[in-house]
Length: 367
Image (cartoon, rainbow, N blue to C red):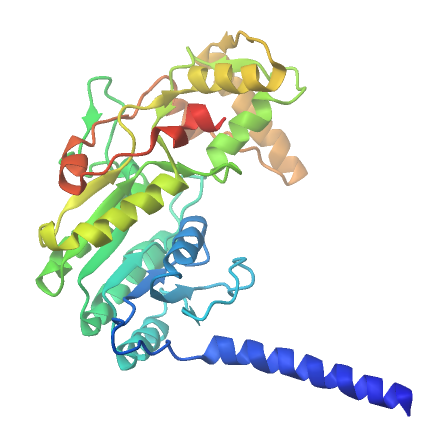
């Protein structure tokens, strides 16, 4: 009898916990008191991704967030929250997008939509996913967002939409989207569609720098740091003169940027292009010297490797990796960017938003 009683108590407690969780997931937005305004509603596509999950978590305290993602909330490591509405949907499926937007519309619409969902890989080859997700998916989200009464549609583009191999090129908000590789073409098409949609609601395309965090969630950065801080025979080699460079932006500064867009949206044009990036860029040599100094507590001089020898090495590694079923991160197309620098000047963006990246999150300080 005692065991039956204990079992019944434990079963009741478990049922209560599960019921409580179900109530949290299905709860309606908390109704404000008479003196309290309703919480703004924000939609985030790609909410299970690196940027999307961070932005969603940040917004939850002061907003109702409709998070749209292919993956589950649990796999995105996002905890339960009374203000979170998780919708599993693939944006390349127009019916799924329509159902999601209908659900949001019936709940009262939304003020902002951050379209972060997109496809990218480092093979630099044509892939049907660029068309189905980056182009068609963006078209579907734009089409079915018209019913939400948005204050602003924010599209996550990339600085890579512009060519930068010319040493005299400095990327600004007015630089044309003229790069020709598949990912860049798909993002340039997205910018074009976002601009056209400004007749229905205010829009904004944001060209992102390389976004990273303190856990190094940026594949190229992770790959080079793993190599430089390993015990491999080639761990101190830099291809070319070590002057290849891109701008890196910490995820905390990107969240700050998005917050500024939300606060300043009334003063922004009906459609525009802004840049989320620090000024200038950071070279591989700077990264190498900083990372190795902090790791080994002494200065380490890199060994510079000619490009033609690097080409041979990359071919051999890819052949060997192909036989083993594990290709290396380095690809031949990357040699095109050896010693090329993506110099950025976001002066216009800073003047419009009156917001600049916090220096304490600069990549050379985070190392």
